[in-house]
Length: 171
Image 1 (cartoon, rainbow, N blue to C red):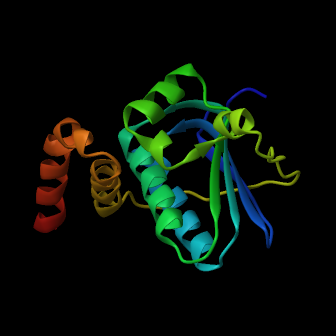
Image 2 (image 1 turned 90 degrees about the horizontal axis):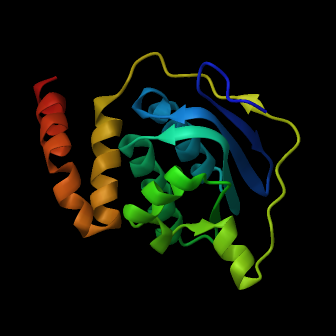
């Protein structure tokens, strides 16, 4: 399946799991919609979150920050949930590892190496609707999450965080 012209997130939720197929680029333009969907899914409690990047052509720091937030949220939760990332291409794997996300988010590849179970994709998907307006607060929080995920990221994102803090406080 080739990536669509307009990036989308296809989702399938059951009582047991949330399966998300990322189509095209995962960026600040669609990260807010993704975060709101994930936030609602966490509140409804699903034991398994599987995010498939097979058709993902790229990720930016905002999306990676939201992924970090999800990983930390699941890790801190008293309820037993699991987040599994699958089918990262070479570039996305580099981004994921360079930002330290592999330290607390499982990849399907790592689970296979450990002999863990393999998640099968859901069969029926629904596209997420994009939010009407981009939220600077979500982008700011995403970048702060990357710093929380790994302190070495602070120097990478300090300027972005400062600019976004100024923008949020001026509105």
